[in-house]
Length: 117
Image (cartoon, rainbow, N blue to C red):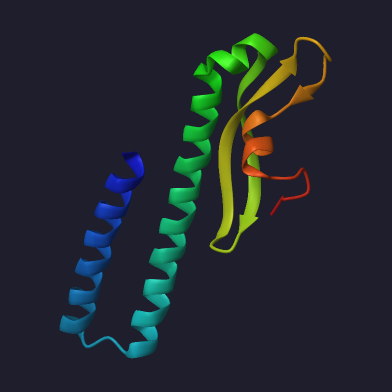
């Protein structure tokens, strides 16, 4: 539901900016640049909410608790997205059997260690 609320708020914000631009006599190019900036920010915010929600789901998962132990929480990662750089926080785990370490959210989302911005 956080994503729906976020999109709702941003859509209203963008609508207000369009109306303000029309009243101010803004050029098409200015409006286009402003819209791109607003939608890129929205894209990054949606991806951040998605990844951090996925991390939270992993954290509370009973299946995860059977196989993985939390080593650290809130490790920061920056990746480059089509919308620009994105920084999100995730949890670091240790497998109880193999003793390997992993960021489960990165694995689940298909983010490789080389996805840095």
